[in-house]
Amino acid sequence: MKNAESAGKRFTRLVEILDVLRGEGGCPWDREQDVKSITNYFLEEVYEAVDAISTGDAKSLAEELGDVLMEVVFLA
Image (cartoon, rainbow, N blue to C red; front, side, top):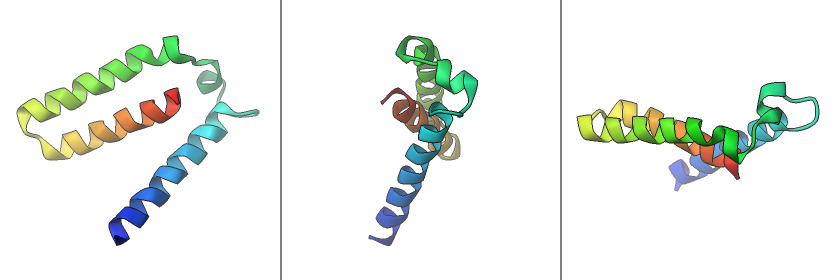
């Protein structure tokens, strides 16, 4: 349960960071993005995760799934 609490807090922090980046006064590049413009970045991260799965690289998979999650939150 302790790990779940920690993961929940980290996820909440990710959402907060992306809210700042995309909000008033946030990063101009992030603020300009929409679903259409971010799609290629999302697909690239998914392909990298699939590659990590196929090579059995657990460390890379964890990193790429983190990137996929960030793109999902960005798109949400």
